[in-house]
Length: 156
Image (tube, rainbow, N blue to C red; front, side):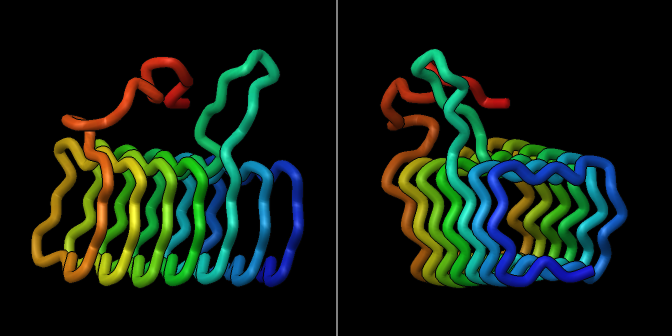
């Protein structure tokens, strides 16, 4: 399947089998891929914004929790708030990836490439970084030194 250059307000393919799909250059207001099989997916140059829930709070605009993202390409992608909690990101490419907020709680990032990735806030609690490439990865805040933003907004 191909969603190259798609522009969509809200995109939801939770629990779907989308191996080898490409979203290259797509722009989403929000996108949910929770528990989806996205092995070999191409998210290069994708832009996904954070969701505003209408009462002054924000939540993750890019939801990848529990997804299989083995060998996925996120190079040059920009995500305002991404939830990758519990996702399998083995051998995924995050070269030049940018995220304002990214949660990788319990994610498997074995052999993933985070070279030149930039995070304004990142939570990698219990993430498996075995053999991951993190050269020149920048993280301005981690869970330990972050502002109270997440406490005042929704993680889901």
